[in-house]
Image (cartoon, rainbow, N blue to C red; front, top):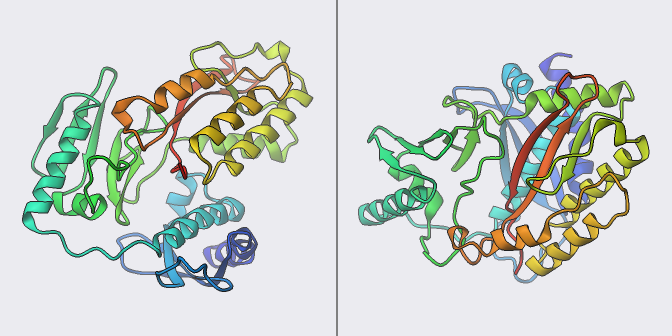
Length: 329
């Protein structure tokens, strides 16, 4: 499948993915403007916007499109790339209603840069190299923030020490050691060069190939943080299916919920009844949510995950994910 055929299939899939969100796709095309190929999706709100809406009703969203990037990020099939565009369009649509910000003054840029250095210092010792790179060393590794003060000021506007962090500072993988400025935000990446490349492509590709051959024993399986996952011989196909369905339902239905509602959802998820599902540690999640390091308005839910594959000599790779949606309350 060449790029034209690939994009044609994405065009066919994307409208249905966005229909439930009240968004209409106007155009999907390859555009210039960067050193790498990227796709631009033009969209608009379908129907009449709510009374509280004060922003424009149409906009654009972008995503990298180079064949090498699609392969390295496991977005090399139209279905997965269409889901990537769905995410980017949804985010762009939410930003339409944001207030327009004026250009930052030199003092504001300096103030916001100092805020960033102080925020990063919560993770470990900070070295500002002065060349658009800030290195942070924690107990286990070094991460590098690749952004200039002016770029950060565009993200951090307006700066309110009592508000949500303007940026998620928690990588979802130990392989993501770069936080790079891309499309007006900082993105976690396994490499410094642009466009950013998230971790986990091998996992995604392996799971996709397993599903294609009908293998239900490969996938993500949640268990309580810091506990051992179930032994391979304890699994059965029904447990795998019920867990996957519950996991997908949890993430899909959490958007826009209050902290209390999400905690209740976690409890329900932990009590789904399948004996091979380890309990989600709700108390641990609540404790992380109240940690002042994250800010009183920036909740975090912590869920332990394990990658499992029957055919590997060492079947478990565990990850600890910090999931940070912006809840309503």
